[in-house]
Image (cartoon, rainbow, N blue to C red; front, side, top):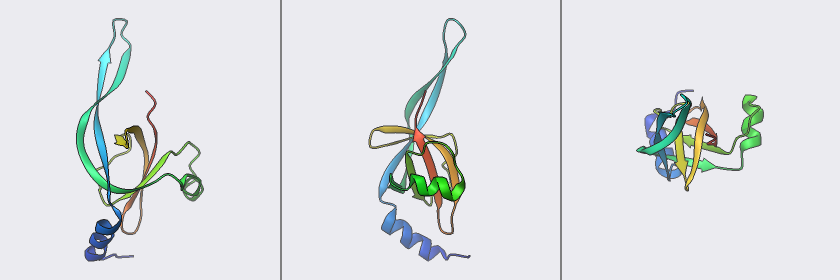
Length: 113
């Protein structure tokens, strides 16, 4: 279905009202050669609609079998699987990105080092 840009713009203005930060990642090597991944600074911020209560629905719809802690709808196409994001001082990893008619649905789990 072709959705006009004006419709997409109106959806974004109405629903994408939450600021979500994308964080940089760092990697260090310890004295024994082990690699340690860390969280860096905010790279940029994007707008989205955040939902904590549709995890089971998303799991069933897409056949996902892992823990989903956060679902974001957004029109931002520059958020990738594996990105580290922060919302309300909680850090998440983007685990999936599913296209929809007028937006993308990002699925995220709480960050686990």
